[in-house]
Length: 561
Image (cartoon, rainbow, N blue to C red; front, top):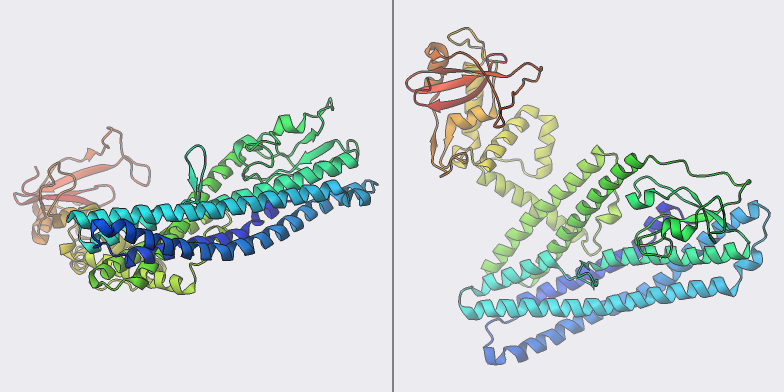
């Protein structure tokens, strides 16, 4: 028997090896795309391209030859160690119940089963290598032809064609495995699935061979939280191998053992071990189905986020490869900008994954986001690129002296909460289009503070004390060049501080009204009371407040009564 944790960790070293190979191939193809001469005349293009493809294929074959030798040695060791561990764990159980399995452990049948498993795994490796060569050749052929046609058409510049080709490679990568359904997988995903499933099935057959020698017909299946829903129905129970038991169901029929979707099938982390009726004690406690299914959904979301992070890291490897070979200043500038934006996206994805795992009590699996080949040098480039992109983006929003990095900005939430909250509100307003970046954060902040000093604490003409201001109020106060709420995105004017104060302290006012949403449903204050609003106005503007909380809600130019 192998535990779910052991099965999950088994492929890690081999997956790292494949990851490194993938990254090296992508970087190599990216360099090739940048170095290719797309100004080659049409009569010479096919011949020129053939020469470039030979060079590219040779480079890929050299990379793969290094991998193939290492992978065969690792597979043999991995299968041998894991299967021996599974068999020895079962042997301990047999010995505990007085059964001598020394001779059975040395049987030719067990040895042949292990050899067959290793042979199948090596076949998988060979097929994977062939597939990666074919995929990389097809990918670079498609991208080179596409870039050449763009340049020859005259509709795209030389730099634009190469930039688009590198971006497509960065986004799509090279798919290593295509299934009959048309679904494609990255090599690391295919290897993880194949190795874990292959070892589990090989060990399973050896366990069944040993059980037959020991005249043991019953097995108990392991159980773990977060199993896929179809597996949760049969995990943790006792089954009959032969199906002759009147008390326990047949293993293959109840669990789907022997099929891809069943026990020890694709990515399954369940296993089984000997069980003796009347002597063995059940080792697995019942797992709540609803709780299990919720945990499974969480794990699937985590896997999706991890895949997205790995994809971003591979994209950065492609962009870095292109930058290393790029000599054109304009193209280099565009590639560097894309590298920095992708770096920032990567940091945000990593942050969201951490938050998701912490919020749902999930264990963060660093091996699942690791891309070997995305080393310290590239990682540091990504960090610097992310920070530059972040700073430039905040400057484009009108924040003239932004925090120097994403981490510095996040630190503000704890070191300077009021500033963090105000800056974040401004950023959200600019991103949504309700605030023009031409306003500048410095003016936004000064105006906020002016209202806090001069308006908060003041009483309206009918005696309501102003206690604060909303983000929406400041958006309305400044106005915008293109109102997102308007069908035609017409400009919306703001109001002046003097006019606002006059409306609140000297203007007329309407009776309060209850606030409802677009579905005509009543809105409520945080204390549970029904939310109301009251409008104060002059012939220059109107200002709306919440009469119960004293918060400034919104304002508009011209008379609002």
